[in-house]
Amino acid sequence: VLFSRGCPFDCYFCANKELTFGPVRFRSPQLVEEEIEYLKHEYQIEAMAIKDDNGIPVDQRVARPFLEAIGRTGVKWRGQSRANGVHPDMVKLAAEAGCVDIAVGIESASQEALKTINKHININQAKEYMRLLKKTGIGVRLLFILGLPGEPDDIVEQTLAFIDETEPSSVLLSILCPLPGSELFAQPRQFGITIKTFDWSKYNLTAGRFSEDELPSVIFEYDKVTPWGKGMSQERILQNYAQLQNILRERGLNF
Image 1 (cartoon, rainbow, N blue to C red):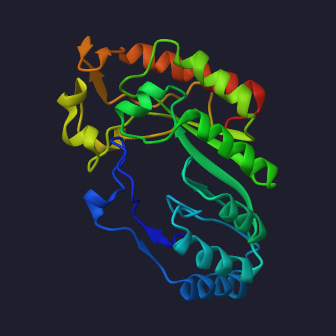
Image 2 (tube, rainbow, N blue to C red):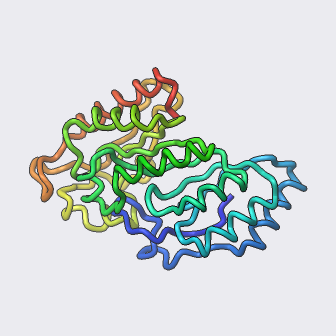
């Protein structure tokens, strides 16, 4: 289900933002509740995946009536949320409203890479948020993107250290894909990027979930020297992805 459109944040890798689609739009709590009750009656659903960018809205004025409406329906659900800025009371309310799993878009274990892509989250605060989710009884799924501008050479080691410390229930690993509507697509040279193809069939974000040999495409190339430092080769990005995906598969963590 989808109960809102857009995202109030301005991460450079993302196309689902206010500058592209206008202000974030939320459906009313009444319509949210009515739709879930319809799905229960017509399709006998007992659980659902909320596909909104912010399944626990940061704004408490929006979050409280939204979560209370879901809670009245009695269904279990999973969603995703911002890593920083969600009030602890809203996490508690989400759990009471049936939330069993939240995907947290960390994107990178490197604070420098997060700064480069305009992802205004703090790594240490994000770790605290994940501890809060787990303490409240909500499972944590981490979302990472490899190949981001500003990513250090030891990103595999940093990512594994982050996973070891936070102990998520699963991890979804993606490779950077500059999507139309994103800042990376609109201004690639600003990041030392050359986009190599406009064949949309190659613009895939995730792979490796069904076959160990499956790899995503890298549809861009970094300059050897970029505005933020040394550029990483396509081969190195894919090697890092394959290495991490294999480790996640061995640990039973890949989503």
